[in-house]
Image (cartoon, rainbow, N blue to C red; front, side, top):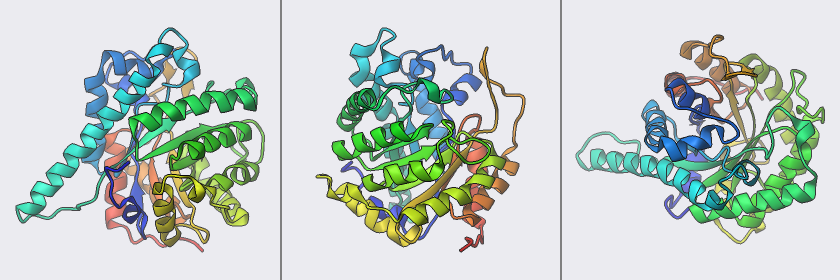
Length: 347
């Protein structure tokens, strides 16, 4: 995390662009993603494609790229490669970090040569997914088991050195809480995102407000929604915003030994909601199928997706990106919208 000397500056009074999908982008590029490893298999078979995807997102304008650690957790790796857990997480972070550092080097050289440069570092986040299938909340184990598995995952990630962890697609209150607690105990700043039903409840049927209340004491930088359709994002984001404002936040991560979360939290107070927690929004644009994994038949064009992103910014989102099915073209369209926008957030 020392790579970014002043990460908080990225969160001051501006909208950040998150990257898009990795797993479905691997599939789109012809890389096999067999279950249970899914996207993690590419770390062993096609690391150069993983790196290229990260590079394409940065070139599209992403300021946060998420390493390919969505399926490098304990439960998934028990399918024969558990002993390589630390190695796979380290490799995933190395691939993303290499791209981020190359981008920063290019920006620095451009600036030294008298050209324009954003001079902004690309943050590298590590994805932390549910230990079971994202759409199967009934499979989520008890909290003691969740604590053990997420603690191991955070230990692997801590050693690999991301700028932050991105806990995403959380479908139950207890797993969101367990993952947030593990991140705080490891001294890793985190963002947390939930997957919801059409009505805004978690897939488990638990209220979104209960999930927000469960994780806020651990001081997340941002709370978000992901892996839901764009229309669902537009419909449910106001509920998330209301929940974060109602809870108020205990900001427990500021008491963690590492000072990095504190610097980030201090900056987010200037850009986020009244109590400092940012809102993140990144939707999926195609549907899971039981045979292939994802259907690519129902596409939302980059231009259409950017219009959705503009609306999410109006609704209070400070971080916008893409989930399953989105491509570098979608993120480039979002980047263009953010750069040219005159979007006023609703109060």
